[in-house]
Image (cartoon, rainbow, N blue to C red; front, top):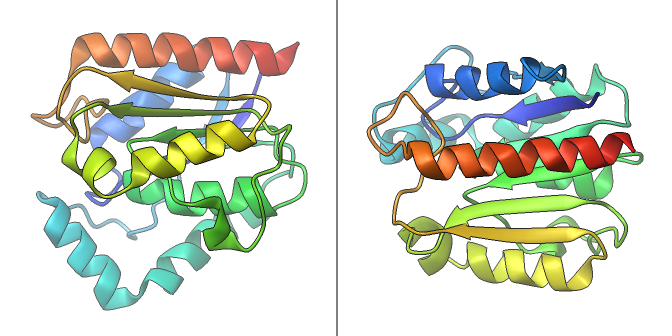
Length: 193
C-alpha cells in the first residue's frame, strides 16, 4: 500500500478533500493531509489566493516542505490545484519519491530548476474546458511533463469545472470523480507491484 502526502486547494482543507483522502484510506493507503492554511477555509478561489498572497507563497510552500520532512522519502506526492505546486516541487526535487498525482493543475518542470525525473510515475487529471487548467497554461505544462517522462499520463474529463473531485463543493462531478478515483487506485496498485 502507498503512503501519500496530499495537499489541498485554494479553498483550504475542505470536507471534500478529507473525503477524497478517506476514499484512498478505505483502500488501505496511508494518507497525510496537512493544513497549509492553518484551519482557514474560503468560499471562493480569489479569497483563498488573497490569503496566500497575504501570508506569502513562500510560507505556504515551506509549510508543505515541513509536512514532507516528517515523512519517509519514498512516498507519493499529490495535490489539488494550488496544492500541486508543493506536490510537484517535492516529487521533482526530493530524492526517493515513488509517484505523483496532480489534480486540476501542473506547472512547468523548469520552475523547480531541474527536469522531471524520467522514471517517476505521474498522473495529471483535469477537465478539458476548465478555464484555470486550459487557459492558464497548466494543460501545456502537463503535456510537456508527460512527453518528457517514461511513466506519466494526462487524463482529461469533459467539462469546465475546476474543483470537480471535491464532493463538498457545487463544482463536484460524481461521474468524473468516480473515473478519476478508479484511475488513481490503479496507479497506486501498479506502484505496489
